[in-house]
Length: 508
Image 1 (spheres, one colour):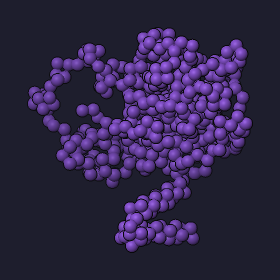
Image 2 (cartoon, rainbow, N blue to C red):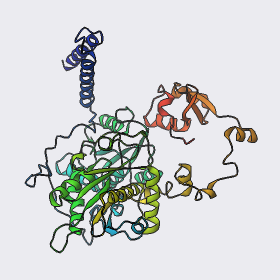
Image 3 (cartoon, rainbow, N blue to C red):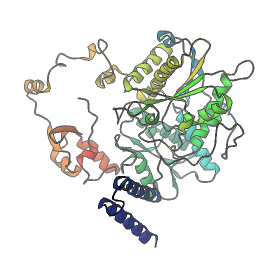
Image 4 (spheres, helix red, strand yellow):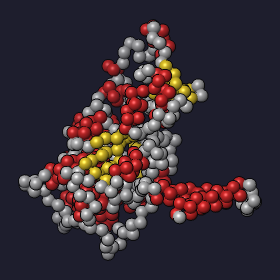
């Protein structure tokens, strides 16, 4: 049987590896061959994970489309540029056709001489550029007969794709389940619930390989629900970049043509998440405006730009939502990107607040990342008067009303500097924790060890927050209420260790 064959192959690979470790094979090349053995084992187990129902979001693309070939014919279904009707049959008709707006004030403040146009994707009905791909993936699933009203649509997402998908599901009559990391804003969750979506939250720090990552959890839910459940899968779905190839890129090109009908744009700057927006726009521009440079912006802490800019010492969670990943999604063709810029959280949020304050653009934090990256790229390229740059502003401030829009949140996360932060400080701000505990006669927080089980930690803390210690250092904060919610949602089990479920992102 297939199961016996798999066991046999596994045993053979293990035996092969052990022979190498014991130097029975290739005694003079043990390190090199050991690497080969480990690679073969990892490759085998990678196949096993795919075979068990989990579609890896970072597997190599099999697409052979070459945007540099002017005669290349795409094998996929494409649609002509859509026009918005005067009276729409549903809200979905209003997805796309967002405006280009010229910046007037912050360009002068930052001594930018070229013309900067922003593509206001936050004007989509769901509030972000992801409305485009969510609708297109659903429409294509219906067109090929895979999706039928009444089915369940499941999507692992940072929230914006989920909102677009939930909006389409509400209109078209699908059940919708959205799996998203815990760091995503309360506003996104509230909107998703109001649209009728069911939410499953996952650990923010989980890597794509982890069993509790939002991608693996979504696959598990799909497997449990059976054949009427589908994952449109923005990481693998070819209609993620095609939505932008057919529509977003065409909208920009149509808007920037000169009197001779030729597109006049020198650079397009946009944030990189799944890479669908970048891939779709870049492929169309390589054909229609080959001299235009495509610049992608990656948040500090993401890995997408590592192969081009080199790794950074900062890895792990960052607060900007919707861009950056710890893997390269299948749909992201990085070969069509001409340059990369890294932007940290502080610069991104400060710029987003400036866009709101001085340009009246009610955009989100990733729009700030894109604009900071654009200004840096413009200066590096020496663009000035007579040049034109288009920057994609992907989502709306609506999703972040309780976050970077408030001085308190900016200060609490270390993004607000003095003297602006002065009103937020108190008389006790510079005091040491030990002094405050002594003065207020407070009891020190409870302590749980990192290797406690969740069940043991809940019974030990009696509903109170506790510090998690590992080798005499503070590892994180354990919230028993949050742990109970994870148990109820199935994202952890009672036997899991506290280290897997505690919050490691508390500021000092």
